Image (cartoon, rainbow, N blue to C red; front, top):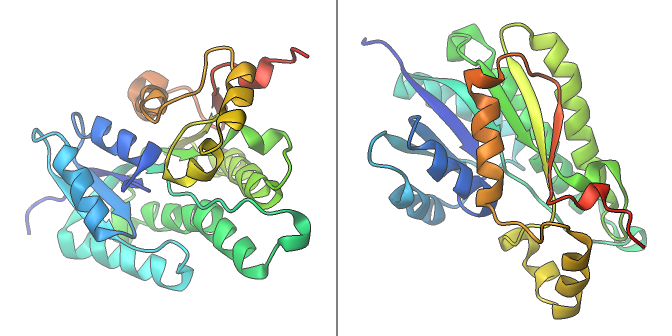
Length: 250
């Protein structure tokens, strides 16, 4: 069997921030486009650079019991290894405490946190991935260190993701670097409900010194953190939110 081909894995690649990152990285890396919607992933693949190969890995990350086996089998059957990993997959359901359900809590934490941990477990395994992983970036949120009504479960999941980054940065060093990026308000399919109200948009825009963001605004910092230019950076949380978290204007 010929030597393994090396790829970068991007989850949540079917839309939003994940799609922007996957298509951007495809100019430099061979990419694995991860997501649950095959049709949308095919559309992402059409937008990827023709310079490098892009392949699709279809999996609903809420299905945790299947994830490890399916990913490890995918790697072995395709004779590939993953050197870089970006976890963009996310689930958000705004809900006040009194309306919260076990299902929504499970779906949020499974997609946002637990799946990332299980994927990383596979990627550091010498048998499945030849211990090829060098760098990982997990997409968190600027809400992880703050608070907002109806965001308790989502915010808690992102805070957990940042905690995972800090501990794994120590555990996996010096072989693997791992950091998180914390975006602010960005219009994607997941945030359509928030951006559908003009008054809400106006209120948010007034709180963002640089205005609201686009999915492409997150690509540059992710590209940097994956690269050797960031070889001495691990365990860090990087805000990319147009200055929202430092704005205390009344």
